Each structure stands twice: as C-alpha cells, then as structure tokens.
Length: 468
Ligand SMILES: Cc1cc2nc3c(=O)[nH]c(=O)nc-3n(C[C@H](O)[C@H](O)[C@H](O)COP(=O)(O)OP(=O)(O)OC[C@H]3O[C@@H](n4cnc5c(N)ncnc54)[C@H](O)[C@@H]3O)c2cc1C
Image 1: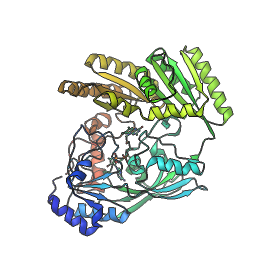
Image 2: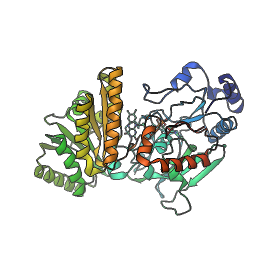
Image 3: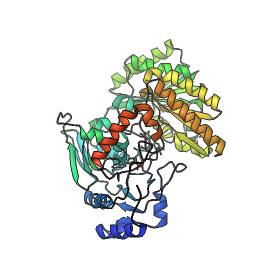
Image 4: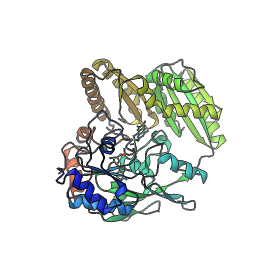
C-alpha cells in the first residue's frame, strides 16, 4: 500500500484528531518502531506512531488510516519473532501498551476482562492473588501483551497440559478497519451462535482488526508443583521418553526439551547449577495435589528405569526449582550473549514424530554446515530449532535460509506446522502456502477483503504478495 500523504501531514492530521502528546513522529521514535524483536530482518520506518490510551483513540486512528488509505500496524510490546509488527509499508504504528487495565476478575464465573495492552506477567500475578490461574506462558511474559498473545495465538511450556492462548479467549472488543467497534463472543464457556468471529480474530496477527479488550477464561490455581529433571545419553532417547510419558498418562504442566549446550548455558546463569552428565535433558513441572504429584513422580521413575534414562532427579527445594525455570526463561538472551545472531524457529510436529524430527534437524545441521541448537516445548511437539551464527556473514545467512527451508519442508512432510506459536508475520509468509495450499490462501484473502476492503490492516503479512 502506497502512503499517499506526506509524513508531515499524517502527523499533523493525527494531532488534530487525538491528543497531540499521543502522536510521535520524531526520527528516533520511528526507528524504535521499525521492527519487532528480530531487528536483523526487514525493517520499515513508520510515518507516525500513535500511543493509544482508549478504544476511542484506536477507533479515530483506524478510521483516519482507512479514509486516507494509510497502512496501520497494531503493536503490543514488539517482542514478536516473525516480523508481525514490523511496518514494512510505513504508515501508522498503533501502540496499545497504554491500554493496560485489568478491568475485572470474576471469581464466580472464572473469567477476566482486560485491555489488550496488559503485560502478561502482570496479569498472571493479579489472577494468582485470587487463587486463579491463566496458564498461557510465552517466555516473553515479562514484556509481551495480551493483545499480542491473542493475535499470534501465543503459547509456552504449559501448552502440553493447558493449551495455548487461543484456548482461553472467550470474547473480544475489536476496532474494525472503518473505525467501528464490535464485541464478539462473550463470557460463556460455550456458544453456538453463528460464525466464531472470536476464533477468527485470534491469531489474525492484526490483519483483520485491532483488539482493544478481551474476555479470558481462568482455571483454578494448582495447589502444588514439583520440578523433575531427566538426563539422557542421547537426543533420540529423550525424544522417545517424551512420547512415552504422555502415552502413560502423566501430563506434566511443563515438559521442556534441552540439549547439553542449552543446559550448560542455563547453568551459567543459575547459582545452583544442575549436574551435567548427559547429551539431552528433559525438564518437567508436575502440578496438582501432593498425592497426584507423588503418583506421577513414581510413574516417571518407572518409565525412566524401563527406558534406561541416565538419571531422574526430583527437585524438592522450591527456590532451586524457581532458579532453574528462571534460567530456562532467559535461555534465548543467554544464547545471544555469546553468539552474534540466532534465528529462533517454532516448527512443531505431532508428538510421535519428535524423534524423527530431532534426527532430521541434526542431519540438516551437518549437511548445511551450520550449528542448530534445540530447546523447546517438546511436550506439545514444539522443538525450537535455533540457527546459531557466531558471525554474521553472507555465507552464514545463506546457510541459515537453506537450513530453515529444509527444516520447514521436513516438518510439513511429518504432518507438522510451520508455526506452533510465534505466528507467520513477515518472515514465514513464504511458508504459509506450503502448509495450507493456494486454495486456502485465496480463501483467507477473501476473508481479509471482507474485513478490510482497502487493505490497511498490517499489509504485507501472512502471505507473500502485499495486499493493496
Ligand atoms: C525472548 C523471547 C521469548 C519468546 N518466547 C515465546 C514463547 O515461549 N511463546 C510464544 O508464543 N512466543 C514467544 N516469543 C514471541 C513473542 O513474545 C510472542 O509472539 C508474543 O505473543 C508477542 O506479543 P507482543 O505484545 O510483543 O506483540 P507484538 O510483537 O507487538 O505483535 C505481534 C503480532 O500481533 C499483532 N498485534 C499486537 N497487538 C495487537 C492488537 N491489540 N490487536 C491486533 N493485533 C495486534 C501485531 O500486529 C503483530 O502481528 C518470544 C519472544 C522473545 C523475544
């Protein structure tokens, strides 16, 4: 979409429509909003940034963008890993972080109503004070927003037992491309009323509307939890144990897969390091009543002994367990301390295909000649391959693209998906057609046309050719 108005006039117009202090047009602001957290990929300077504080601000901004055919990119914290909030066609970036109120926590109905700019970890803390639990836990939870989570259907380690963001969204307040405001769904745990627009907007990556409020389902806060650590001699064995654990009916709240390298890095951050004597590690959190946890630990020990895992360690000290999880949360930033660049992918395969996928990624790494680390939410088939680059060179970049392409194709061949949680955004837009086929892409385009006839909402995302 070509911006027809000059940068200067867009800024001036916006300052007439909404409070002038909510509109930023200085070069340093525009640079700060020119990409999401993956800064080494494509960038695009916006022409203006609006710091919306209310649905009214959003509505006026969107209507202005639509009337003038100016691209509009919604943005939460910009922590995305797929270029989703990168304004590649310039225009207006709509920052939602000032809309950060938790409007209601209803203990009787076990639901909450929040503004979309609420930071996830703040929401976790607020509901947990009421002994309620909101399970979705993308590891960026200290910064990412509920609106960003909903728009990407974000997930995290707890996906294996509790599902991901999409499983908790009951209703949405959304500003459509013409500036009108709709409320979808509601606060009931079920509805059969017509097309499920809530689901359609959940994961739409800001291409269909701007989410301003959400009704979210809550569950009871588990009474207890225990962290368990399994050491394996081989990556293959760790993968096989993942499938076996779940098949035997032990559903951990979290089931993470880590290579020896990843564990070594986590130990460097952890004042109470875990002994390292294997090639692959499983880090689990069991939750529930103490007796249910004890039963699960006993089952795990029996599985590990039968399958000849090297070691199983239940961490009884809560402080030590918290340190391990804190280190896990910081794994990506830790990798970036020693390497120049990593590309974190979120390919996901059916759980029984984990061993095949892990082996294939090892072979691809060898064949292409580039390091690929692996750590991920293995319990739900989401093994994050991390393409590791000690130096940023043209040759390494080429190898990285080749490796990602090969992994994506293998993942699809095994019945997987090219994005388990980060979304398609910009960087994976060439892969969506491989997964869905052109007929479905064409259907998505017609849906987009119905919501956003002028194509102003986050243009250039999801599929390769720009919508204009
Ligand atoms: C260290 C690190 C760890 C991470 N770990 C995980 C993980 O475990 N799991 C996971 O799923 N992701 C993870 N991510 C990726 C990212 O944090 C998530 O995708 C998160 O949901 C993005 O939220 P955000 O508020 O930053 O959204 P942004 O990055 O700002 O936006 C993401 C997308 O949502 C759209 N959007 C944002 N807000 C709205 C709105 N209100 N209305 C409409 N569209 C909107 C944007 O246009 C964009 O397309 C990680 C990122 C980092 C940097």
